[in-house]
Structure formats: C-alpha cells, structure tokens
Image (cartoon, rainbow, N blue to C red; front, side):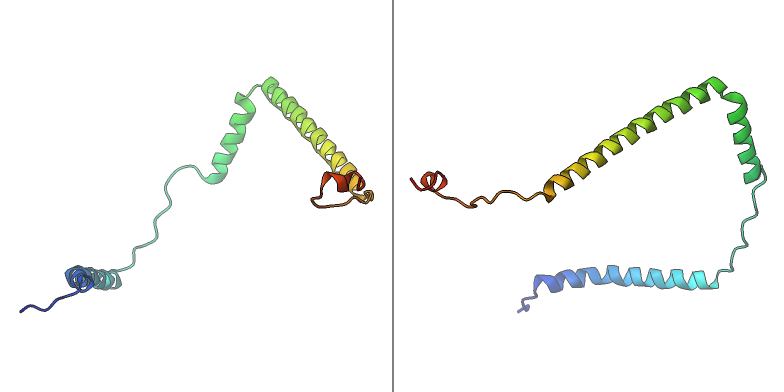
Length: 123
C-alpha cells in the first residue's frame, strides 16, 4: 500500500526540479560573468558639449522670445507673489489674534451632562 503523503510535501517535491534548474542557471551566469573580460569605458559621443548647449539655450531665450512677453510674464509673476504675500499676512494676523484670544481666561462653567434644572440653578 502507498503511504499517505502530505500535500505540502508533494508540492515541494514538484517544485524541486525547477528550483534546482534556477540554482544551476545562477551558478552558470556567475561563472560566465567572472570569466568575461571587463568592457572598456564608453567613448564620449561626438557632438556639442554641455557648455555649448547651455550657451545655445541662453541665446535662443534672448533672441527668440520678445521682450514684451518677458515683461508680461514678469508682471504677472510679481502680481501673483504680491497676492500670496497678502494672504500670508492675513493668515499671520489671524493666528496672532487667535493666540491673543486663547490667552484670555474663560468664565467658570460647569462641564458635563446634567439635567436642565441643574443648568438653570436647581429650581
């Protein structure tokens, strides 16, 4: 009679050849990488240098963008920054006021849940 084999053991036995194959492939790849000679560093590609590209971009920005557009953009950015500054000032004033109000003492009040009669003075 064939003994009863747990399903986990059966699954492990079914996966064993695949695991062995993967380990063998990793071993062969490592061995091949160790025997392979090191590649020489790549040669720089011919073409413009980084500084030349920066100079070209600057020249394009100067010559192809009309001065009126630059002024318009500058004024729009300045207005937006002024709006942000005003909002920040308002928030700062509000926070200062809230801090000052929080510093005042509140009248003593009874806390908790009570009956209406307790709240009205015990009538």
